[in-house]
Amino acid sequence: MNRFVLFGTLGVVMILLVACSPAPTTSPEPAPFVLSEYGSYYMGTRKLSLHDANRDDSYVGVTVWYPAVPPANSTSRSPVPDADPDISNAPYPLILSSTKVARIFAPYLVSHGFVWASVDGIDSYPHMNEQMVDQPLDILFTLDQVASSPPEGLESMIDANNTGV
Image (cartoon, rainbow, N blue to C red):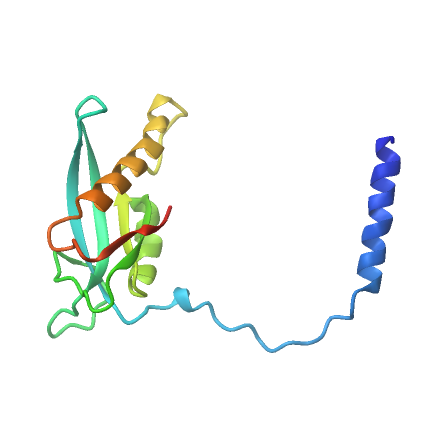
């Protein structure tokens, strides 16, 4: 069968499907995306320097963002370094990314009950080069380390079986 006949047949079928589909109805305004607003949790952060002996004894800088106990006398939603973790509904699903991405999205998702581990310094390169292969390796290494040896005080908070990247 030549391509013209195949695409012509597909085009006719698509036109028929569109023509036979019910007329659009008006619907109420879509509900706001709930994760675009802050949730009920405050946020703490921990800085880690993880040693990867399997890759030329390199170190991977990681920032862990987690639900935290609200700071006394504060209404700020800014992350609090080394804040006490909120384990009230732990364990929380884990998200991994670069720190650049985490700065944008982590405040919202962590406030809804996620833990976020972000790898520092993997967000941009001036040129396509061999360093770029380190990005996925750093993410996988971070997942392995955070899942098998969570940072002190966050041991019961991380549900690494439910992880997104």
